[in-house]
Length: 451
Image 1 (tube, rainbow, N blue to C red):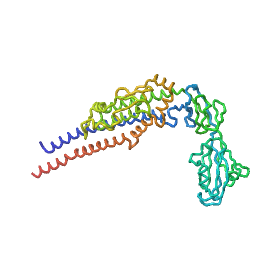
Image 2: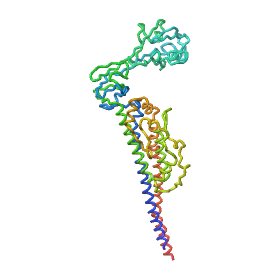
Image 3: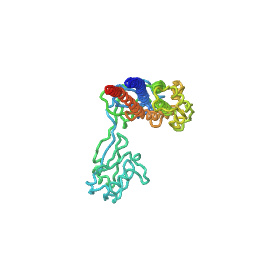
Image 4: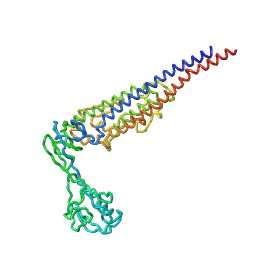
């Protein structure tokens, strides 16, 4: 057989092999893209559980511009109906300031002001000495002798900016009561000769809203008595009325959980069905992801009574075996030690089971609506704890999902980059072998001509 024939056969065999390998790698890339889409769906489904409002559902409203938030605060008092809300004015805090250190004859906030005496703010008495600087006065206005914060007592936050004391009321819409029998506040430039605030930065305003045409005015932007069982949090004024459909949180939250369970199970099915397209190493990553997510869901919340769910190393090994990897590459034979990605995955605990969310066969979730609605109706604080926006299961799950799908540096994109690198190597070598036999044939012809 000629050299040309051998080279062509070798090239044909390699091209056939590389074609199969390329197809397998492309299949795994496509599978990871699908998984990433399913992970994004799950992340979207739990977004309301990790929002500022936490587990209490934010009821949808007309224009969707974010001018108000609706929070269900008393489900038992709630009446399901529509309301129109117009925000005419927001409550704003009272802000005022003192003279600057330069107006008081010093050049540093650490210099003694030479002002002494007593005064009171909202009923709380203060005394300053002539040796006190602007910084000393700030400290006395901010905390007592034991270092306790005074803002709750005086209803004022005090700061220092550009050599001036800045006062801001902690209760929007509220005025400030000042008593200055020894003219200390006057000398500091806080009040004038009539004992009125001398330098106002912002006058206090109350919030004004209309609910179903009824005018409501309050000294806060959280209005709790306009609609029974509901707190309205004002964010901005509205040019037109907003229509709010109030729904009982049981049904609203049930719908959200159902959506989450459906999306999560879709992700689990996608991972299971994708294993056949993965190398054993890729399958290991996929199964690790599966059980990381289950751990986030079923780990106990604080000190809840928990139950063990039977997810073991054996289960993980069996799941990977189901995959029937199509491309070997640098894979290795699986063993228990190689499967363990963290000791914690051998034990997963559940507190969601108590409210009707359970882990079934192969990591799929089941949702008992009747049980959930009964628990939520009778023990709403139990549900609130599990869905807490800072410590609940959704926060852990959200963090894991974000790490998985983050662009370029997330787990899936890093895996895809490694897979693409292998595909590029195969394509480069395939191109090399495609033309390398020509050089061999050229040498063969040259040898024939010479001989």
